[in-house]
Image (cartoon, rainbow, N blue to C red):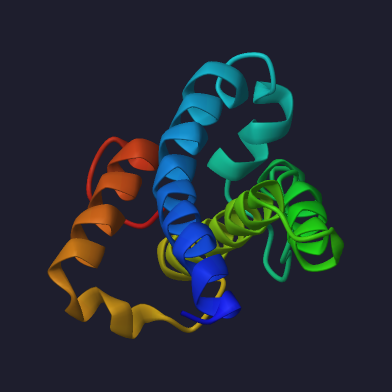
Amino acid sequence: MSEELTHATIYVPVALVTALAMELWAALLHGKLWHRWLWFVHVSHHRARAPGQRFEANDALSSTHAPVAIALILFGCRAAPSVLREVAFGVGIGMSLFGVAYLVMHDGLVHRRLPVRWLLRFGYVREIYRAHLIHHTGREGRA
């Protein structure tokens, strides 16, 4: 078995578990922190943006995990070979996978900041979309 394959047997499952766990982490942060103590920032996400306004204060909350993921990936690329290095790399990749999925689904699809409406062809994606609309409006409509 090659050394690269051995490393992949550690970081690939760690990345997948991390990407899934990030959904739970995001839900916890959203409900317990953003809708309470950080509402003064997050409220910008629940208000309509002015025409031509591409960013909102809430975007800062969504990007707080990127430096952590980048640091973990860099550590996983540069550190001496070890299980810790592979786990760190996997966690960084998993966080990044979740970040990309969040960007596409949430900002792109739900809030129409990216041209990804074609994803609504998939039933699971439609359900996520509907759930988020209900979160924002209390009904199925435009967020």
